[in-house]
Length: 110
Image (cartoon, rainbow, N blue to C red; front, top):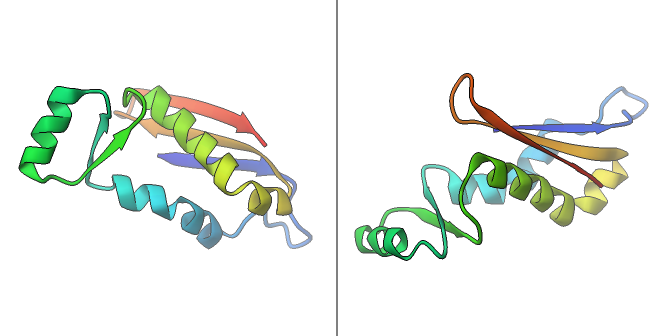
């Protein structure tokens, strides 16, 4: 997954320190890293996952690359709006690659 931010750099030429972006995304990365992502209404898959005890995250939508991109962009805009706007960021773009040649993108304005 690639996250791009668009806005006006500060007087030093920096838009946002990477460590801040990493911190803002940490809850999602921690929840999803090495986890099975499943739609919460996929009862059969959810039953299997719970029986195995595998790390998982249940989401309120089908886990397509397109939906995941929209979710991450929306999550960032919703949970970090003040932080991002404080750094004069006006656009969040998320790209999720399934393979080297297959990807989805989503863009959201603040």
